[in-house]
Length: 237
Ligand SMILES: Nc1ncnc2c1ncn2[C@@H]1O[C@H](COP(=O)(O)OP(=O)(O)O)[C@@H](O)[C@H]1O
Ligand SMILES: [Mg+2]
Image 1 (cartoon, rainbow, N blue to C red):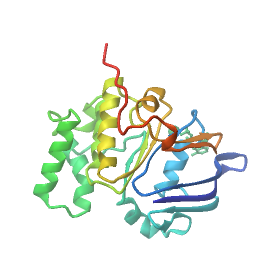
Image 2: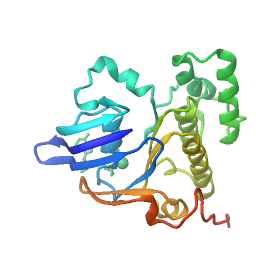
Image 3: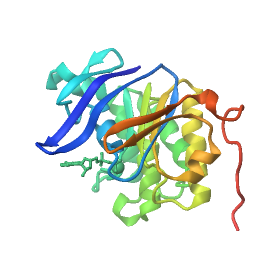
Image 4: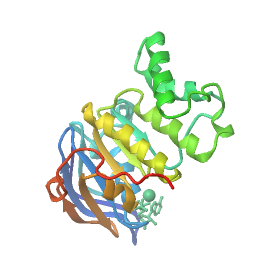
């Protein structure tokens, strides 16, 4: 699904987002992208989404070469990718349900099916009573859940999530991870950037660790205790 070969991403002469990163992710894999703030996690996800081009090296996503992808083909690439970025980019003048429905409408899903899917996703995310609200009237955590619903509505082949649980309390964070795990179980390839040890400890997944733009550790799934899905869940106090 994803191949990166000796990828550099340079923002300025002396400022690198990524340095000589090579990695490969199979279709259906789940990987955490870890590393301290400034390590390059967001840069890597933006690169995979076609929002940035590498300065050197090759990036392939779903068989397309991002390095050479004409701008006209970027929207087609993005239809394959669900993204949860830290700035949610919700449409302020549309309701919560309309925000989630957008991706389905673009993909030509019939209106009745769109309504059904949007409703059931938002119910699951605890937003069943906010369907007609405007995003800006919601809390940060609620907006985050709307962004997650939007990213997953279309069952994307690839999900890129940038600290998707960052603004959420721990219990809700685990609920979000469960929903992402469901998408993974249905076949979605997933990359979740996080530096939250609670999440990393709860879910055994491959770990890609970045430090100062370099990939310093690639721990395979086998390095973690056996079992799929959540291992531990601490109950709320
Ligand atoms: N738009 C930008 N312009 C210049 N430098 C940037 C830009 N975005 C990120 N950087 C730099 O790239 C490095 C990696 O940043 P980022 O990918 O945001 O890391 P992370 O998401 O792991 O915190 C940092 O040193 C950051 O300052
Ligand atoms: Mg970041």
